[in-house]
Length: 344
Image (cartoon, rainbow, N blue to C red; front, side):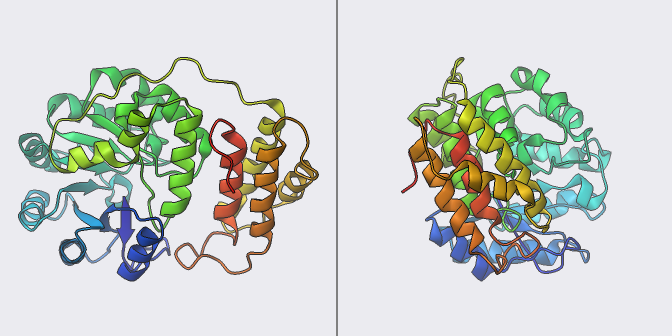
C-alpha cells in the first residue's frame, strides 16, 4: 500500500517517479492511493487510475473517499475506471467508520467483494470496534486495518475469530507491533504493506519478511503474507486459509534481546527527525567485537550501523526522518530475527 501526492499537510510528499523507482528497486508491486488532498479526491483519484493503467505490472489503484463528498458516486466512478478497492482515512477526513454516509459504500463493498483499506494508526481507538461492526454486517466486504491496527489492536483482537473478512497490514515502523500481529493473528489475515512515503518498500520487506520467518511461519504462509492473499482480495476472490500460526517459537537470546531493545530506543527519535541519542553509541559498543554464538548476527548489525553512521542526507521520500533511519531499523530487525538468514 502506497501513497502519492504533493499537498499533504503532514509535509511528506511522493511523486509517481519516486514511487515507481522504489518499487523497481525491489521488484515489487503495490496498491496506490492519494495522500491527503485538501481540495478533494476526484482529481487525485483520477491520477491514481491513470498511473495504474500506465503501469499495470507495478500498480493497482484504490479510490480514497470522503464521506462529505458523494462517497458512493465517487466509489462507483472509480471502480468503473479500474480501481480494485477503496480507501478510508477517518482521521484525515474527520469521520467515524460508523458514519451513516458510508452505509451504501459498505453495502457496495459487500455486493462486489471489495477490499476497503482503513487507516488505523495512533489516536483513533474507536476505529476498531466500528470496523468489527461493519465487518459483521457485510460479510463479503474485505476490511483491512492499516498500520498493524496499532490504534485499536487491543479492542479488535478478542473478535478476530468472529470476523474472517477482517485483515491487518504491516505498514508500521515498530518491530514489536509487527511481531505481535504475527504471533496473535492468523497468518491468513496478515498482509505485507510499506506505506510509502512514510515507510519504504525495501525497509518493509525486511521487517515483515524476517519477522515472519522468526515467527516460524512456513513458506506457504509467508507467500500469503507477502502478496499472495492481497492478490486474491484485489481480484475479489475468496481468501485462502493458510493454516494456524505456530504455537511455540524460540525465545530471543539475551545478548540479542539487549541489542534489539537498545536499537529500538534509537529508531524512535530518528523517526521524528531527532538525533539518535546515546543508544546509538551503546549499540555500537554492544557489537564490537562480536562474540559468542550469535557473533555472525551481531557483526551484521554492526555493518548496518556503520553504514547508517555514514548517512548525511535524508531520504528524499522521507525528509522528516533522520538520515540512516532505515538502516538502524534494519539493524534492529536483524537483531530480533536470528532464525532468519544472516545478511551478507
